Length: 358
Image (cartoon, rainbow, N blue to C red; front, side):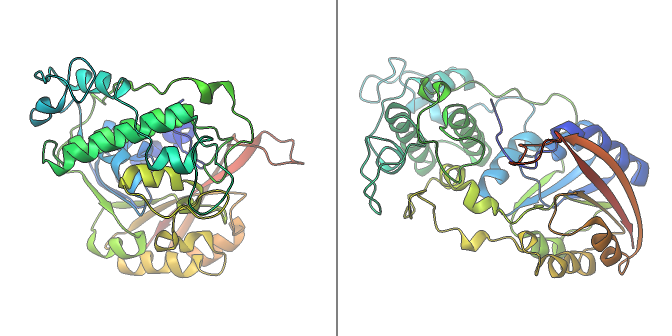
């Protein structure tokens, strides 16, 4: 199944890349200030651009590093001492033969009844609520705990470098997405397990991008409004959240996988404390101020904003506001909805690409 994120830009990538190419030409430096899964950053790399990608979410940071900084599997040379060919951490160790072997090992790793089993499976006993949560089957939650422990051991032992760690975190999230018992986001789990969620979690090797250079790209974790002060680029692409739904709350499970921690799981949904990753772009009151910080503080002449008719601000409001910072041009098109809301029969949604030239 792969990525399961609202607002994904996979369907409209050609329109975005064509627009950026029309504005600044190929081989330019583009800042992707809210990079998410890294889909736009990856498309930019493929088309010859140099990319600086930014996001506040840890899972986005790891996803995008894999998209931009790899074109083949890392060697995992130091990790070979931790891989057991018989699939048991207690048995005789054998040399690692490569990335595919480490992926096979993850699929057969010894389950552990740890944090995910306790907090997010039906057999667990969560600390802050009496009702077990059903994000994952008990078997898959225990396997996730086993994989988390293994990655932690590799990292603590300096057996993997930063990019190898990012790749394993990326692979863990992708595998968990395939068996998560959710309808769309991780804001809440389904009351009954769907067949997909009962399948054993399985790890598959990432298919690396072959096109485009892996040199000179950067991936930075932080708030766009703050990080932008340190970036100079030919064009800045901004894909802000459109709705009030905070990504930090709706994808709390993935953030925990990405951080490798064990935060307090709060309430029925088991949310992690997430206010430190609150986005002002999800607030109708604060969104203008957030945009203004970027426009005024970033060393960049061209800004391209992707927006939706379902956004917090109407397109006319947005264009009127943007006109205070430069000349505004808008392109309009339609795409398939992520999920039609109750009472809405139209399967398409109007999208905009707004170009501001300072």
